[in-house]
Image (tube, rainbow, N blue to C red):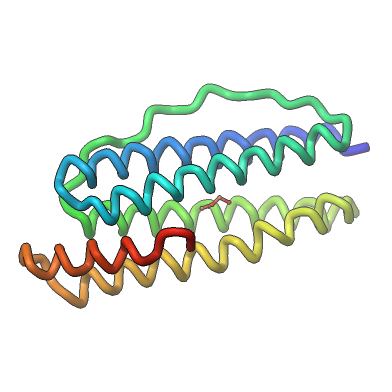
Length: 164
Ligand code: OFO
């Protein structure tokens, strides 16, 4: 049986994962409309992963007989200055999600909720991977510069990251 506070915090995390999914769909669409098809496909797929992160939390709530309370999801940004702007924002967003997960982990440990603490370890590992993934893309974009040819190549590189 989870405490009311843990249930509320898990519900908040569901909303954050759903917002991330919508944000990446919005970014994906911006990429497609600016002819960055590789980045568009990558972000579209990543939006699906974020939705899975939300569902994994929902399944945990269901398994612990806890009430899911879905929240209104705020509208994501839809216009971006450049491909670098898009991926800088994805990276910053992942850092904010990591902070949120860390706070949850800290809360569950200090309140001796070892089951939820253990469940959250998957998210700790996932955030480590995602921060590295997005930081890597930001670094590549900075490395190649912002000419059309370079951005085409980096878009092709991002396409190779499908499934990561
Ligand atoms: Fe990309 O973050 Fe979910 O957890």
